[in-house]
Image 1 (cartoon, rainbow, N blue to C red):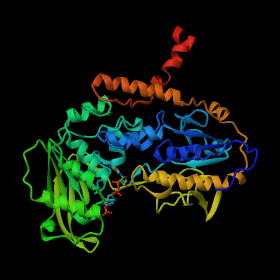
Image 2: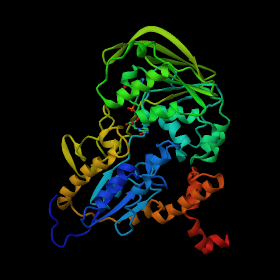
Image 3: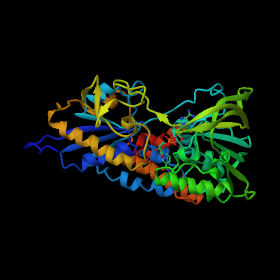
Length: 459
Ligand code: NAP
């Protein structure tokens, strides 16, 4: 890192996206020892991104990382500007850019990848991003209303997201009541008729992306059996995989493949070597998913042309995400990321002055929460190396927000919303119950302001 010039002027940096990658970047900037003022901007009134809206509600320990992510919000250096949408329907990026010496984009990968098979447009066919966001109380998905009135559902994919979806649906509503899911979600889960949860995996047991800890959890569910459908490949012996986590997965799956179901109320079926080839429906709603049987061919699989059918009312594809292009930034549609070198945004191979990326929009949707820390450090290091050469910005973000009639939610306001969620949690006998509707979130965040506002109290 270069040494700071004498009498260094304070620099202003925006981090767009208050998920783990953005917050690790904000922390790295705040801890850098350089005189920087950082604004963390998010379109939602609440921080934490995928920790709040992606980590499964029953993974309470994983959410404890929030304590670490909250640290940089010392008002002397890092501010939170929630409820600020950047882009076409909000504050244009170029206007925001004029207020900051550098901008770190940390908006993640929010688009569900498609299977590209017929019938995917039917009601009851959803991406995992939408489904997970719904049960996590994301304001954009409160109206999703996923059909849970059929005894069968399928989740496609062999990553941790597929297991999260399967586990949440396999748990009873009483088990889920002890999490932060919003009241309407808990009501929907209480009314769920789902009994058979089919996890559809295109390759073999040696190829799954699950981590052993997550796989173990579905084997420990009190109210659900796990049945392995592997065409006998485990018994025949799969080739020894190189990684420890794959060996652990295979040991677990091999043990389960010999287990008899215990007649528990729900059942998770792990279907290996099956590719969904089409979704079929009745009256516009998914009623069946048709699978093609595969055989292993080295590290890949080959379709056999043989089909089988699962009767389901819901199909969730958990096959990964892509980033949404950021208007004004270059975008690589093949990788679904912003082209960059170590976090410096590249246009036609050349760095874009003052523009940086971190997290999934930089490297794609991989890794665990902690992966974002090293990633953010790399980006911040690049930014700090460039800082002296970046022209200081002249604009004032308060003016820009006022011009667009945007009233941000600052950290103190978020803490009011946080307190309201904790209060609701107390009423349900859990730690927190999320507020999911934006209007309600804003009302809770601004409650104290409203009390202080004489015009409001008179009204
Ligand atoms: P992922 O780990 O990349 O898994 C995606 C899965 O989808 C793979 O099994 C892949 O199979 C399959 N797939 C892709 N395209 C497909 C297609 N066209 N048809 C059928 N299957 C297809 O993605 P993810 O589950 O979305 O997770 C994203 C990241 O978040 C991962 O790094 C994950 O570990 C992390 N995460 C962690 C946790 C946790 O720690 N508890 C929870 C959630 C997410 P192939 O291998 O055959 O391509």
